[in-house]
Image 1 (spheres, rainbow, N blue to C red):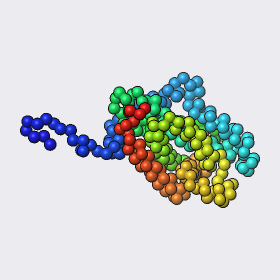
Image 2: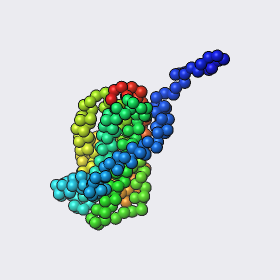
Image 3: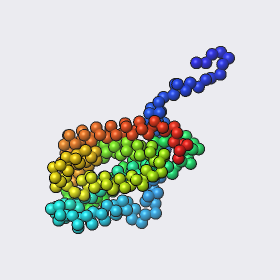
Image 4: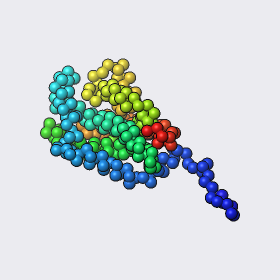
Length: 276
């Protein structure tokens, strides 16, 4: 309140909680998010001779090796197994690259956020946005490869953005939690890269769940990536609608992870400028 003859007084108690304030700041800086995503995508392909095809080289080579080694072992026809692995690698690479980039971008931008105000979550959000663009571009050569191998696409593939967006919320929640740790502990990133390798082998990216023993299959159902991956493959690979339970579990876990990640990240977000 301002009384006659008194100067304005800033009431810190009127400041919203960091949880809400970060959301408000993120909305105000939405144009910067678009610019960061655009810069990341352009930087990735600017000097690339093959352009968008580079997004498929790593999963394509990995698919080729895994198909040669495991297609006979798992009893899959080589063509079917190749597309099964490739579809899993696309979604897994989106998750791995997004969460890793979110940590790195926040740490490497320490000099910037120490000089000017920015919502600290902007780097995680931009990393997820960049990952979505790269995933969308990677689906183009995937479609070419699928058609070349005799695959067919059902109209339900048009619903593919639904599980992708749900999964992106999960990736954002994980990215925020990891970023809040990475600014305090320098060894979080290398430890996470090791964890990612183990996590991938605990996710049915290169093997079908049906071949696992009942006990192992029951344990892997606690893997939160299982459900969006199954929904993604149902639409892209099988051409059928995923089970409602899959979508419901994936959405519930993603929203829960996002809220938890946002709460963990914003609890100390006002201190990050002094830590990085």
